[in-house]
Image 1 (cartoon, rainbow, N blue to C red):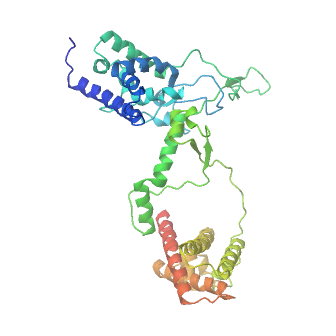
Image 2: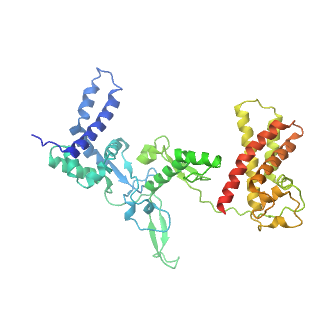
Length: 426
């Protein structure tokens, strides 16, 4: 007669039964009521039978934090499981920065990944894998009534984090000769390194990017910025991201986490700076900043494209309005870039007698100008931008008040955002 389970043991067993029931139901739904395969499935998913098979199949997979497969899909060397807190702490960003908040990956036979999903189940903040590694007696009792069998199964599950066989590399793996001496001609002055893919770190980066781009808090923060309101969450943007696809149509052949990302592995830009010498001069001898701004090459290109687009008399629909907004916003991006460049001049340059700019333009371009209040300057610059754009498009297009109001509305949103960011950076 089996010993009654205590509350914790019963809760753990219920988790096990629910997990198996869900997987069984998903498979039975695909079969007819009289299909002979139903009996085999019912026997296969009986808790004792499935757990015994899982304890056998767990040897076909390995939990890792550093994987070889992403280096080359045909490489068959060792992958490693190293808890981040056990790694040497460095100043650079690396797996060691993850601390205890990391997610292990799984490599090996994709057909055995259901075992890992089982071991990822959690109770009171502890995964089944953690409980197996700790040889938790309540977890063992939840697995089976036989203590010897429970110990054997937990030992098998705990082996998930251990390397399979002896450490080895592979001809398809990458190798790096790392200098450890002062003489580069000394062949003995190098260590031969076999780099592994930091799959747990890569997954954390992916999760962070997804949250910063598509999370509800991130959306609310961007909406607040657009409305000129404060939000407790900063807006984070990542430019020039590259996405490396691993595994093709079968990302699960690389690893479990790679499958969860649909094969997407985000690479942050690590480009060397592109040196562009800027000749930034004070705007002297002109009575409008747009007389200088309008001669920028990209501004001329964008204005020309917008003129040609409108000359084609596009249909008056949502798509046209969207394309029109995108082109005007591109011009406004150039205006913001132009403004940021002029802000690099020595503050107070607009006080020079050679400066003929109106007060609003001085206040917009010169951070030390005091001729006009910022809010008033923005409104006047916005209006002047709308007049300038109408003038650029008026020949041969009929531009009037409706277009002016449209340009002014778009400009006010972007220029106010820029002014707010500039004020908070000082």
